[in-house]
Length: 187
Image (cartoon, rainbow, N blue to C red):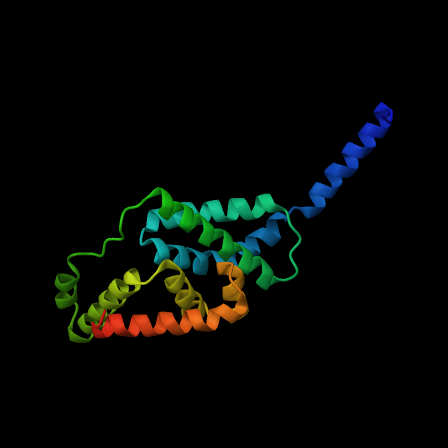
């Protein structure tokens, strides 16, 4: 065993501390990242859980875990994809803990009639879409959201969902076909 002196140990600890500090994100860059990503990430979590309070909690946990990683990221897209990956995993964990089903508002029709015919039709369409989306498998729902609401590429979707990029095209095809059937009332 190699003997280490106190001064050598202090140097090792100082260099380790400096390395950790270099990996941490400074406050301004984190604030900038948060301002660009928090809203779309919250919406993504909320759409997956249907619970605004849970979305708030999971958003906070997502950023906490992101900051704990202290990893080097190649680009802004890499950071964004990693945040969505963390959020996806947290939502899955939440679903495993809470087996409760998503509930849709029961008074949608009453709200629709009070706001006018065009708005009522749009509100009814949204309720139908939410019901149909809730009946999709979670992975299908996630892929559709990332592709069409977030505008993510197939590679980005694959990174977030933890699947191969070649599988994304088929996953989206099947999800769109199932969603269309649900909206037509076939399934």
